[in-house]
Image 1 (cartoon, rainbow, N blue to C red):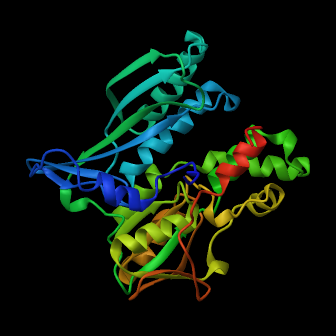
Image 2 (image 1 turned 90 degrees about the vertical axis):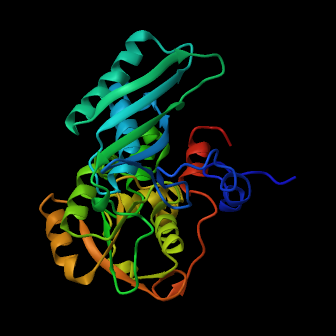
Length: 337
């Protein structure tokens, strides 16, 4: 019996057990579950409903309101990469019994304020305490976006000849979280540690994804679990193409390299909410760059989409990451291993 790793299941399990058994066949499911595709799509008359479900992670060390904001940004991201603006949220909390009403109220303030900032209404949900529940995984949520089906950008839509763009760079989320949660365990000068902690403020992609889509991007994907390399492999595999990337052209935010070295963590395979991988037709690339730069978002053309399969970094073929590099680091710092 093999030891299973934490994080997303192996794609072979999805293909063998989940994909063949998806309940009833309905004509209104325009996009169903698929590896590397962040969302599903329902046809609703002349409109489309984009949906994406994610776990809710609340890290008390962040402060409960800040944790609520962070969790909500992560959930909204997976519909935002469709190019449509998130419109609704459904959310279910399974809280640890020791969490007080006051603590939950602060989490909910973070959820509410983040939704309000993005024009998102909470449509329904469930909140309860249950034995056996514990931080950080305390529920799940589904984000929805209702809009024009012709405006949807699929993460598996890259085509040979497209330019590849990356925003923000690798390991932004992992570095921001780990240096904030475990500052006393990381061997960095105070100034570098503070710089690394600042990365946590850069983990939202809703407005960046909208800007890129409206400027003409063809495909957009966020670099969460599995990091930047994982996101590239998911996009390339979904589209049946090869990504060729020059790593020297990829943006790297201040503090990321030093923090990853101190943590012994590979930045390219560490979760990076806040980072987008974008495939753009060459005639739209200048507009996409301009739209993101107008938002003060670091972005660069880092490579191209070509015929073939897989992801090449600096000319060398790579394999998809087996596990997010931040998981074992988190478990070590948290004293779980």
